[in-house]
Length: 210
Image 1: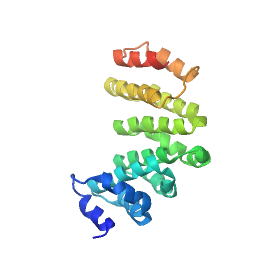
Image 2: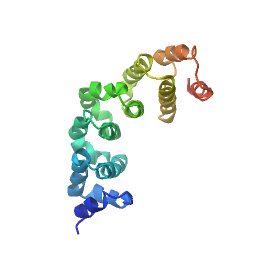
Image 3: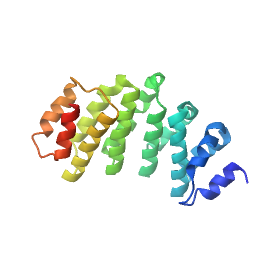
Image 4: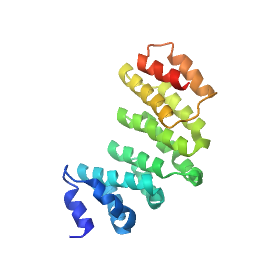
């Protein structure tokens, strides 16, 4: 049984060991093509999830191998299934670099619009992957932070969801070591939200980075 058939057979199972396929995805164009196709088009959740799990590891080590597929990832931003949207944002953010400013600008509006997605988890992932993109494309940092702050200012979130997203925002600012010193958007936002009721954890986190 060849590697493609083996993966398709095993990928429907929860017991698949995806790590054994990562190196193959790096060295084998045919297998990599299969993974992208299955992630984008297969309706079986285990198959498209495991395909994504392998591809994200490829993107972390050899991101250039996935650049040729980004037009397909960009199409997934409009997918009705939020999992596909999340995967697309992640793979795009993992594969951008300094040469991709113009390309990313063509999808920026669609990408950042997921800050108001109907799924709270997708909003959270959009915060994370937007900040990862800002880390890799520093010239977009102010634009991205402004969009995130605006989405947190104007929303219909419950208090629980708002605090969840606020926590994620400040956690990822810290994790990705994004320089916010002197950023007027951040400081104005912090001043405003501190007038309300924030958890002790959020307050402590804000004090550690702002």
